[in-house]
Image (cartoon, protein in one colour):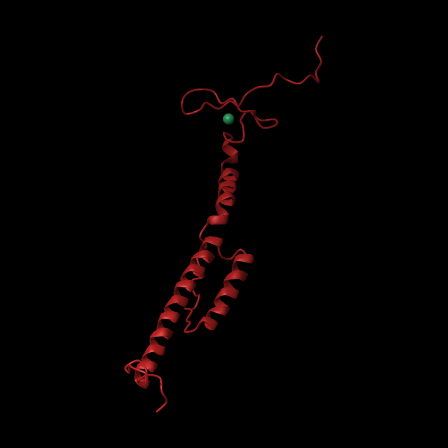
Length: 140
Ligand SMILES: [Zn+2]
C-alpha cells in the first residue's frame, strides 16, 4: 500500500559539476537544484557576494567632495569627525577611513618637522645657537 504523504526519497541536486561528477548537495525545497546551481538564484548569489565583501569595499568619496586643507593638528579635527561619521553611516569603507587616518598622521609628522625647523630658525636668528661658551644663553 502506498502512502501519498510519504516523503520522496531524498535526491541530490540535478547539476553536473565542471569535473563531470554530479552535485551531491541537497536541492532547495521543491526544486531540483541546490542554491549554488539554481540558475534563478544567480542574481541572489551575486548580491550575497557583494554583501560579503561590503566591509572592505572601497566606497569612493563623492566626486564633489571639496579638497581638505590643514596647516595645524587642530585643523584635522573636522576631518577625523567627518570620517568617523561617514564610516558610521556606511558612506565610507573602514579601509578608506584607515587610509585617511594614516595619511592624516603622516601630515601631523610634517607639521612637527615644519614647526621644529621654524623653532631652530628663530633660535638661529636670535643668535642663541651661534654662540658658544659660558655666555651662550646670557641675556643681552
Ligand atoms: Zn548543486
